[in-house]
Image (cartoon, rainbow, N blue to C red; front, top):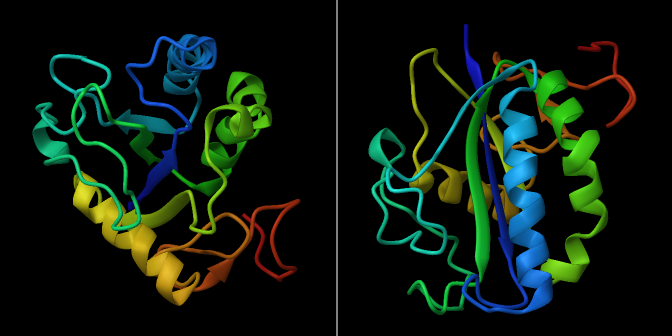
Length: 185
């Protein structure tokens, strides 16, 4: 059975290493969000650096998730002192559990505060795609899919919640969001 890969990317208003109160708030809620998401039904795994060092994203050992990568539109720093981004890469059983995890609980609270922490951009900030069972997506896969979504819009190769696709490439929807369709997951 295929699994759903999710890559998220956002440009922070200040570097991860900044001592600003908003950066501290982002870190504090982030740890709690990760804990809650990792226990959500349908969550399978997420990329975590072997050393767990926040801010050393580019130098970290990500194991099977590959070398850390960012979209071409990211123009801020790459060192632990200058990196100003947040990115996640995770695996899910299906769209509904991912949707429920993103739009409920602590993550929903964090989404409500996103513009306190993140710059507003015209680029998409997340992308989904299906992977075969046993495949671990890489950071570069996520970047490629996000850039594809930005350049070509939603399709079976790269999509978002509101215009999503089943593993076989047919359009699908999650009850309560997206375009009306006869197929509801």
